[in-house]
Image (cartoon, rainbow, N blue to C red; front, side, top):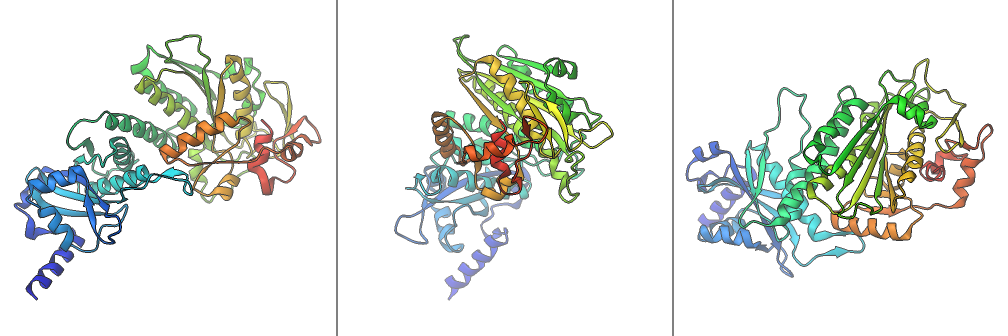
Amino acid sequence: MTMLLVKRAVQAAVRTNHCRSFSASQTHLNQRKGLVLGVFEKEGEEGSLHLTEAAAGFDQTLSGKLSELLKISGPAIKKGKSRIFYGLHEDFPCVAVVGLGKNSVGVCGAENWDTSKENIRQAVSAGCRSLQDLEVNHVEVDGCGDAQSAAEGAVLGLFQYDQLKSKKKTKVTAQLHGSADPGWEKGVLYAEGQNLARMLMEAPANHITPTAFANTIEEKLAPHAERVTVNKRSQAWIEEQQMGAFVSVSKGSEEPPVFLELHYNGSPDSKQAPLVLVGKGITFDSGGISLKPSSSMDAMRADMGGAATVCASIVTAAALKLPVNIIGLAPLCENMPSGKATKPGDVVTAKNGKTIQVDNTDAEGRLILADALCYGHVFNPRAIVNVATLTGAMDVALGSAATGVFTNSDWLWEQLHKASVVTGDRVWRMPLFQHYTRQVTDSQLADLNNIGKYSRYVSHCTQQAEF
């Protein structure tokens, strides 16, 4: 009976984050240092846990106290969840133990990702956030058998855009617990690149204008000046290049457009054909004269997600010193209504000489990208990858589970798919049927129409047909 009461007391204490009966001294919490450790589910033994190598080593220094607490503190920790213990170790007043799921899982064909890597990312992220909520400002993280995935989970999980708030989340630094592993540093760089893109997308549009976006990327690339060239092309240059489709979108805004061109020269062979990355850079999309509904329009500050991803990728490639040549192109502008804005029914001329009837000014991404893609061909690239928040129809088709991919290259699709399995950023191939091409070439006034005849149903397919 006494043991039962003790067990229930411990369960209640852990659930409410007050496991004081095991605390050597609550003053240790003032050190604000924490530790994240992982546990796997034991194969064939539901409810049983298996400690990672780092967790087992930590448990050994405590003479098995961690194992004992895990047994009596409640049900087995579920995958992606965390449980906090206080005062177990004088160096770590707070310890978050996280559930990693089964140790034997790997690439799952049904899920199209490496389940082990994804489990580690999610669990470490949850543990770090739990400690951040306790105002811990430094965390050591168990590598969980894959230090790169653990680093990605930690750095991504601790991201918070609160620069403009007076009350901010605790800033937390993370490092690998135990022996050094080069995978950790690589994972940190990967995650910092993603967080750069997230920061650009989260920031308000009056802070990230086309000019401010370009200046931010230039600043991020400054430490890599020996390998990177940054060209911030002005409106005059854009007009000289006869990018009429791009200019037509920018006309309604007081903010001048910028065509950001980045060259990363990482290959020892200077003649190696580059990979060209093109990103949609609408820093705010009101829809133009075809005005969007006001509900959720604030989220259109992130309509430059493609440009943010492309530019952050080049910042990361430079930091990793990848042995490849990459060119990044980001047409940056706002899509706003005004007396100068493009009107529905207007006809514009793209860089390649094709005329486009603009029947919907809210289908603007395909216009700026058409000119950027045309310009990209002058570099004789081995491949062009275009990234964009192009249409809500893709969200209707796939939701948040995957990114839609349109490509005329089976080889390129295979490379993207293989990479997505490793990173957990899943992709799904979409059709490029001639059926959709005919819908955009049937235009009353011009060579092309910027919306398909049946755009309500397949706008994510017809916008690709225009390219």
